[in-house]
Amino acid sequence: MTNCDCNAQEVNDYLLPVVKNKKLAGRLFWMTFEAPGLARSVRAGHSVMIFPDMGTDPLLGRPFAVADADAERGEFSVCYVLVGRGTEMLSLVPAGAKLRVRGFLGKPCPDTGDELILAGGGVGAAALMMKKRERRERCSLYIGMPGRGYEGYAEEILSIHPDAKIFADDGSFGEGDSMFKALPRPLADGMQAWCCGPVGFLEAMRRHYEDTPQRLYYLLDKRMACGYGGCMGCVIETANGLKRVCVDQTIFRADEVNIHDN
Ligand SMILES: Cc1cc2nc3c(=O)[nH]c(=O)nc-3n(C[C@H](O)[C@H](O)[C@H](O)COP(=O)(O)OP(=O)(O)OC[C@H]3O[C@@H](n4cnc5c(N)ncnc54)[C@H](O)[C@@H]3O)c2cc1C
Ligand code: FES
Image (cartoon, protein in one colour):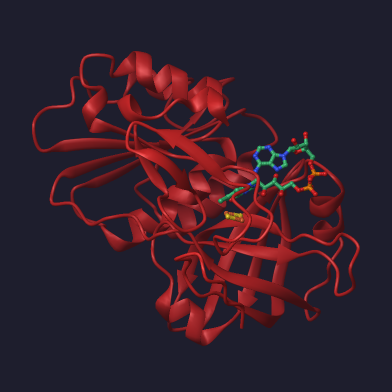
């Protein structure tokens, strides 16, 4: 158990069996852990920090959004893309091995009575999938991905959320080549759009909903060191002051945050 005296939330480190570590596309993987207690308590907006090695190299864990949880099976999953050494190491972990996992990081996303449009660019969709699980009604999930080669990613998402709308940039599968041709506009009263993905995608969402930035929200990530509020490494400047992504705030109103501060 980890504690600090800076108004941070309490997080725990667990040693969890890896149930599955499956390649979905070229550099995209799906990793499932057996963790009945965590699978029951996870909420949309939560992330975990996974330590790629049981030793001290690398020293820091790598944070990933919880993409799905199945309370009955007692499992939760993350979806990760290979970008550097830590994720390369993760990709080599066989099913049956155990990894140190710290969680949960991040404030659960707030409940809202509004109709929700969830829009994810690439692996950014992972951070939104739990919200879709929590709020099946009046909630639609739009996901953009590169295209050919990513069929396995689309299949994994559709196996969990059969009504997800998938868009492939090359138009080779899914419902078209761009979600921006399909995303409802304008965002009326009683509607919100939440999005997660690369900065270019977030900017495109901002342009798409330029008349109603107060109804557009970003789930942001920031490089993290401790994951429990102690290091101030994950601070984002907002209209309401500095916020730590790991403990203070996970979702940000588009007109209250500078996404280039990331
Ligand atoms: C709250 C949170 C949730 C995240 N959720 C996911 C997720 O669901 N799926 C996923 O694939 N990734 C996610 N990330 C990003 C993921 O943590 C990094 O890609 C990972 O830590 C890289 O580790 P590495 O050792 O492979 O790369 P490193 O060797 O540490 O870095 C390689 C490259 O990746 C860049 N990078 C590292 N961390 C980040 C980051 N946080 N944001 C942007 N660029 C980064 C570095 O600048 C560098 O260029 C999340 C990050 C945070 C903070
Ligand atoms: S990662 Fe250390 S304060 Fe957020």
